[in-house]
Each structure stands twice: as structure tokens, then as C-alpha cells.
Length: 398
Image 1 (cartoon, rainbow, N blue to C red):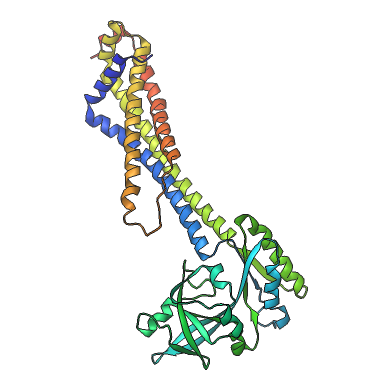
Image 2 (image 1 turned 60 degrees about the vertical axis):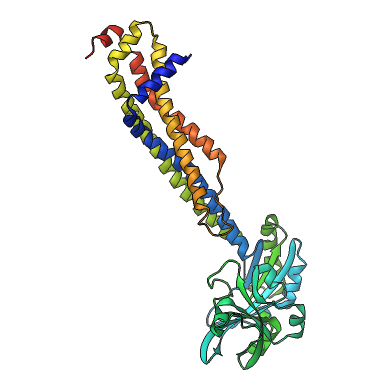
């Protein structure tokens, strides 16, 4: 058993050489703090990725026809149409559907020509893609049914008017004057990887017929009721499109699960690398503790001999040096964890709104336990060496 005297001797021994003790525990401070910070970074990255994916649109399945080749004709009958969209609405697990058709055109704003992406959309597009209305309003059901010559434009395109809001202005696209009824933005920017580009203009899908002579869709979206329904709905969307068109027509049906999985795998791999670095730091610190303790045993050989001569048992000597190693590692772990908890608290003030740095209390406990365990493991050899000294030899050591 470790009595109060053993505790006092161990603490006094560490206090007698504070600078050496500080340098010995420095590696434990860094390693234990890194363990907590690595888990915090991993959790923050995971949540951020989830929020970004959900910002694009949660539980989304999208489909488009695979182009047969630059020289091959694409029969209109193979294109995804509004009837296909209605059929997808009947699929079990689908809560809403939407479709789009985009065309690259140009327009003149305040005497300057600008390339724009004209995107014909159906009614549920705003809800599925989580688009925010900055000013004015979005296209509604009446606009869709009447094929209103109205549009909603992106924030970037709105800036060309040089005023707070261009709502009420008229923009001419392909000779057709369109009234701007609203300005929108993507909740999470897709950087042109979707049909929406930086300078986009959304119109009712019915107006697209004025530009290309047809009323079909390039991309169709289906939103599943829950994340668990996404794989099943993806398969049923592919089956429905294949059944409604000619045999051999290829449709690419995808969901954001693959993107989410890839992002999470990258996050886990990064966290694993950082964890290995943190654990390596702790192991090196453990070697440092063992090294210093071995030097300490040699320096205090005569002291150990005196204690044995006055009746200290070998077990008490063993516990004393193990206790010193444990105090170094536990104190270092506590300091490292406190620093790791302070850093996220300080960063919260400069983080973007809505972004949190979650602390895993399991990582705090694990970091403390691992640090203490390393201190004990690497303290065993010096402690056993101290306990195995012969009193007569120790007393004559100079």
C-alpha cells in the first residue's frame, strides 16, 4: 500500500528539481492535449461536412441521361420529361420531386454584355435545393402554371445593377423580357458543379420551350423522406426511368451519400494520422520519463540506501518511484487537457456563425488514462531498478 509518507517523499523529490520535472512532463502535456484536440477537430469536421451536404439539400437523389456521345443523336423520346417526374412522385419514400433544364445564354445589363445560365425549374426546386430568397419572392405555383415571364436571379448577377435590389427591373433573355421578382442564393455554394452558376437566372420550366422548342428536363431531383430511404429510393428511381424509356437508354442516378461517405472517410483518415502523431508524442514522452527516472535513481542511490537502512521495504521504494512517474504523467495530462479545452473556447469568438467546436468528454478521459498508463509503464523499469538496490552497496555509493 502507498502511505502518506511515500506520497510526501515522492512530491518532495519532484519539487527539489522543478525545472527537470517540468521538462519531463512537457511531452505529456503536448501529447495529451493533442489527443483531445484531434478528436475535437474530427467531430467539428464531421459536423461541418454534414451541414454542408444538408445545405445543398438533404436526402436528395438526382438523375440525368448519359450522353451517348458527341456524334450520336439524342432522341427526344429518351429525354426525361414532366411525365417522368410525376411518375417519380409516386415512388414509395419520395416526398417531393423537381426538375431543371439549363441553357447558356447572354444578356445586356447597363450597356454591358454578360453570359448567364438560364435555368428552367419546376415548383418544388427551391425546397429541394434549400435556396434562400435574399429579396423579393420566389417563383410560385401560379407563375409555373401560367408560364409567367418572370425570373429570380442570383446575388452575383444582381450586383451588376449597382443598387441594393434589382427587383422590379426587366431583363431581356433571347429577346424575351423577363421581370425580376426576386434575388436568391444557394445556402451552400456548389461553385458551378450543379446547374446553378454564379450568374444564374431561374425561370418557370414552361418558358424553356421558347428557347429550345421542347419541354423536357436535363436533371430530375427526388427527395427521400429520410436518410435511411435514400438507397432504396435511388434504386427505384433508376428502375422507373429505365421502364419508361427505350431499352438501352442510360440514366445516371446518384445521391449525396457517396459524397458524404468519401468526405467522412477523408476526415477519419486525417484524424487517424493526427492520433498516431499524438500517441507517438506520448510514447516519446514515456521514454523521456523513463530516461530521467533512471538518471534520478542513479543520483539518489545513497538516499535509497539510507531509506532501506532505516526500515523501508523494497515495495515502498518501488511504489515511491512509480508514484513519481505517475505524478509527472497525471500532472502533464491535466495541463495538456486544460490547454486543449481552452483553445476551442477561445476560437469560438472568431468562428463563423453556427459553427461549433464540440468537446468529446470521452476523449478527455481516454487522454488522461492513456497518459497515466504510459507514465506507469515507462516508470516500471526505473522503479524496479531502485527497489533492487542492495542497501550496503547503496550506502557506499558516491
